[in-house]
Image 1 (cartoon, helix red, strand yellow):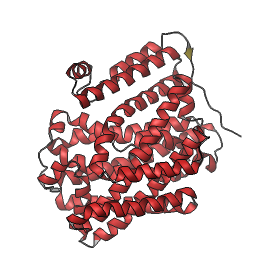
Image 2 (image 1 turned 45 degrees about the vertical axis):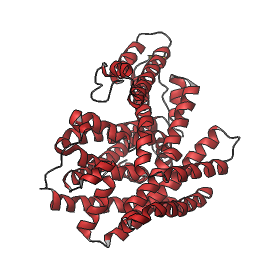
Image 3 (image 1 turned 180 degrees about the vertical axis):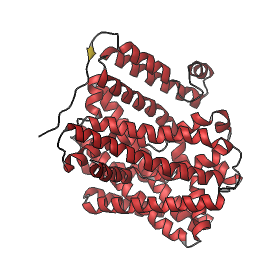
Image 4 (image 1 turned 135 degrees about the vertical axis):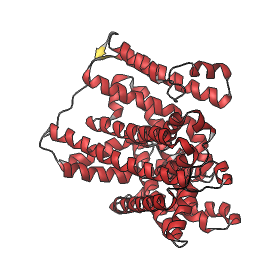
Length: 442
């Protein structure tokens, strides 16, 4: 059981490990300043806790989230939600972000300032051309590269973190940004959204089920116990890495002009590597981060293309792969900060919906819930999430006041109490249904 859980856990760690896992923790460390502890607590809760819980719940039902959502809410809602989710972890956010992180962490530091613009275009052209060719004929080479290089790169990051802590640990943190001064835990929780891991867990739970089934189990009890081992390994691995990278960012000296540009995580990762291992280490870092991000890019093109082809089969997989590659290429050339900026509002809508879906699935495994109640709960959470974003983006004072009047709004959780009230009402409203229990296939 432990061996099977460890093997699957390491595989999933490699699948999850991508661009956001690298750049957002050190950025949080820099921007949170003296409020580091509550900020990293919020980040780990959303970036690790929610992701692992979503993965475990999805893996416990081999039929997947599409079945759960269709049964509990509505089939059309399941399709709309999953299409939006796959576009987010695919061509609109994650795919272009992997390319820009690979460029800005690995390649840009080796170029002169007047070459960075054209450098990005040249790099992304070659990068996406190669990813597209592999996505048309995905092979075991891609899988093996990802499984081997990603853990190796993770080990090197751990070494960087340890040496960085020894060298810079006594350096005082910089002044916290306004967002972290206002609510360190809440801002850290929101930053955890940027990893995209909880959203990716919805999709990756399918991979976990497939992998576990290949290993074979004596009975259902062994299968379920192994899933919890998988979750524990993934949670411990990412928590340790996030805290270490954030601690490095909290103490590594970052110029004010870098902080003003937006995300200092790229600067911390690149400059700390050069400062600790020497200037030539940048070449090695460039090769490693590029290959690691590249396998993620190709894998996301494949998985997103396959999902859309399965859901909307009238269009071929090749067409989907072509379109998603071109969209990723175009958005990647907007630059990392632009990608982060426009992705945040969508993530702040998707994440609450995902969290509440998981909560409903968990409660329904133990207690029968009213379908009407579950639908009302989801409607309330979706409405609050949209209202919060519309109020922020368009500076609508009345909408902001209404959202901020809700409990835990300061901690970036205005939807939490309405969700809990909705689930509570679902215990009493009519048309209750019990969660289906799966049986192991012989």
